[in-house]
Image (cartoon, rainbow, N blue to C red; front, side, top):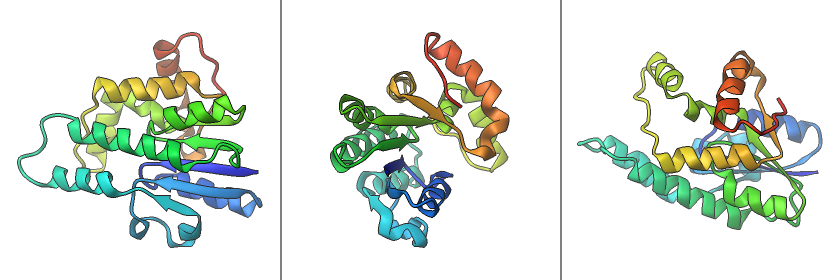
Length: 191
């Protein structure tokens, strides 16, 4: 089975890729991070599109801080378009997408009868209070989320075939289900 795993950064998706490789599955990881910022043991399986992502990160470090989500929105848009071009639905059986990059590519996978999984971590965007608390816990400033980005994540959640969850996130499942049911009341969830 050939699995495409997409994430803007590393997160738990690198661990998922390792587990799938250990089980003998074909795995390709698609990320916005440059290879130098991704796990070396996965380099031969990693495809990157860091150009706008690096510019977005650099812009966030240059004063004054951005007052809008323009940079983040362009970053997500460009990564989503790249992912739709980079993943071949004819040779890929499953797309496991994180961070709202999946809608364009996921729709292509669905059109070919392939599986599209939305990783549960994308529901954080729906609970901005909890996300802010999590960022404060780690000493980081929480991102601003535009309505375009929220809508991109909602589309991913509503249209995917299943929702996955990393075992380290299982404590959040009841809260995520509650958020998902409120956001998309008539959807089914596979956790």
